[in-house]
Length: 482
Image (cartoon, rainbow, N blue to C red; front, top):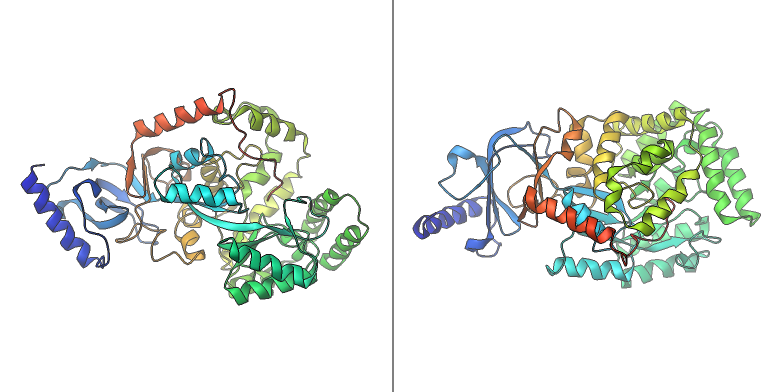
C-alpha cells in the first residue's frame, strides 16, 4: 500500500474505532495494524457464524469487524475459507513456571489465557515478564498459595489453616501477595473454612478450588464458593448415602491415618455414591449452584487418563514436547487403577445435567498432570465436553465467553467483538460441525500479534528441542489434581 493510501486507511480506521467506542484508546501507529480478511467468524456471543468477515486489529484490540466488501483497500492476511474464534482459556492449570515449554505450548495451541490454580512468587514474576513483552505466553489469572487443613498431602508447601484465625490470616496473606483469588483445598475443616470464606468476602477476594472433603457440598455452595474443581464430592453430594459417607471420611481424618489415604477413600466413596444417585437431590443442588452463581470446572481430561490404555499413552506423539524428567514422572503414574467405565460415564452425564440446570461450566484441564499436555489438552477437554453432551458451541463458550464472564472480564475479552482484546484462533475448518476442528490451527493472534502457521511450527520445534535438551528443566513437580 502507498504511504498516501496507508494514511487514508489509518484515518478511516480511526473513524471506525471512534464509532466503536474506542475513545480512550492510544493513537494508532502504522505497525500496530493487522487485518484478517474473509473468514467466517464464530464470535462466541451465540450469534450465527458471520461469513466473509474482516477483522481489523489495532494494537492489542479488535478495532473493526465487518463484511469484507465494506473495508477500503489495505494490506491484509487472506483467511478466506477459514474460521475465527476467540482465543481459548484453560481455566485450570499448574504450569506457569517453565517458560521454555509450557507457556509456548499454550500459545501454539491458541490458549491465550490461563487460570493458574496454585500461585507462587515465580508465577507472578512470569506474568510480569509476559506483560512487559519479554516473554511469549498467555494472560494469567493467579490463585493464592494452596490453603489446606491439617495433615495436608502438600505440607509444608501449602498454607495450613486449622483454626478460624488461621483461615483469616491465610486470606490476608494472599491479599498482600496480590493473588487474584483464594485457592481452597481438600482437607480444610469447618472452622477454618467458614472463617476463610467470611474474610475473603470482607476483602473482596473470590475463593475457588477443591470441595473440602469432610464438609457437605451444599454448605460450601451457600458459603459462596465461586467454582468447584474436578467434580470432587459431587457424586457423594447427590447420593442417598451422603450422610454416611461424610461420617466415614471424617472418622478417617480424625484417626490421623495416612493423609493420602483420605483421597483414596474419597475416590472409592464417589464410585459407591454414584450407585445410589438421587436425581431429585441432584436437581436441588444444581438449582442452588445456579442461584448462587457457583460454577463447575470438571477437568475431564485429567480424570480420563486413568481409563486410557497405557500403551496408547506411552505412544502419544505429543510426548516429544515434554522433557525427560516429566516423561518419567508421567510413566510412573500409569499403575493407578482405572475407575469403572460406568463411573466415567456417570461423571460426564453429571456435567451435562449441571449444564441443563443452568450451572456454569468452565473448561479446564489440570495440566501438566500426567499425560495432560499443556495447550493440547484444551482441545482434548473440548472434545470430552462434547462427548459429555454439550453442543460444540456450548463447549467453546466454556473456554471463551463464559470463562471471561466468570472472572468479570466479559467487557474486554471472551468474544470477537469491537474493542475487545485481540486474542484469536484462526482455524482451517468449522468447529461447530466437529469440535475436533479446533485442533486444525491455521494461525493465532495473541495481544494483537499474528503467529502464522510457519511461526507456530517454529515455536513447536523450539519446544521440542528444549524438551529433549540434556539440561532441560522438568515441567513441574508431581501434582494430584491440584
